[in-house]
Image 1 (cartoon, one colour):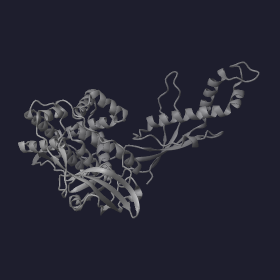
Image 2 (cartoon, rainbow, N blue to C red):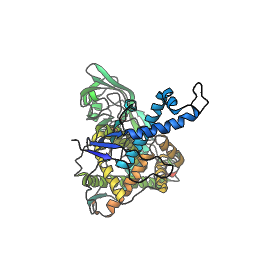
Image 3 (spheres, helix red, strand yellow):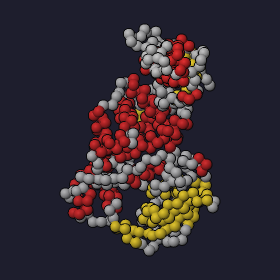
Image 4 (tube, rainbow, N blue to C red):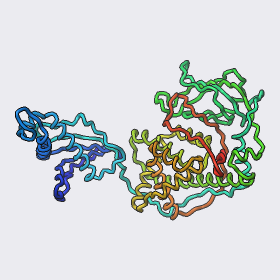
Length: 496
């Protein structure tokens, strides 16, 4: 549905001395969808003539024509001799000034760069100069009621048993791999070759992959249930095949939702022998003075993970309340572009909360397989939170950035300076900024909410994640961060 309005975008205020007068633009805006606008702009002949005179005036002093000293050639002759260059200069200035004026006067609230085919814009010999562009804008919507929400909040007192399980997972990462001749059981590690076939066509291969045997195998664009039973049937060197369905949001569109075959060939089976908690191991993990210091650090990381689960659950309920009536559509191109940002935001949040690489990889693999739907929901939530932040004048500060970066650095073992440099190099500071604003806004929302505490259990991993895409291409190209722990906070985050 198109909602068109013809608008005179020239402001009524007189220009200041020395300022160029505003263009007398005729602007028509078509509402293509909730977030998409098509803008048509017409610049009258009188403005074109004014810019022509200005550009001629700028060109004459340096123009060199036979028979005339520099700056003495007639304007008409200069305009004729340098017609092509003059036309391009006038067109470029008119386009730049018109786009700036439309942006300032029409209040479109763009969320992306405008799509404008500059080469198709022509400066005519007669009549107005016209051009059009497409732009994505922030959606307009009625604000939902966000004060006084009722929220269920998961709570738990971290027990000694929780610490014992987490400590076992920490030691597991430093366990010794012992060759095993028998059938692999859950928790054992297999080295395997994987091949994925569509009929006789090999889609992708992954050789000598280390996989912890669990109920599910999580791939970047598929999930295989019953993996532990499949692995139990495997004999080294003898391939086994099993059907597998590719995710409906895989990177290769032609393969989405397709049933293919996975071929598993076990190369080796290994069991893990946990190390004793010796002084050497304590030194590698921290260093820690003794087992009590290590357990205290693990308890602190469990507190951080519990806080993440609490924020996640509270946020899910807040998001459901805020987006319940948000039935507006978002452009597919916007969703595709933002899906990478959603993955990066999730990784930053998980790193900040002390999750280890395996936990992050499992979460990212799950997110990849439904990234478009989750991105649509996250974007709607973002637009609503952004409106609340504007209405309530919530803003980020330099101290907010420092705190976020320190939290990430504490978990990664890197210096805050290196973390900041990495974020800036990868263009992720805007992701961090959105994370800060959204967290502050959520804090405001939850400050007026009523809470009912419910018991919480740490989720036990039922899948092992392999960073490989069946179809050969990943949705998003971010790198899963590698832990590099040092000092007291350096202990590997408990695997959950």
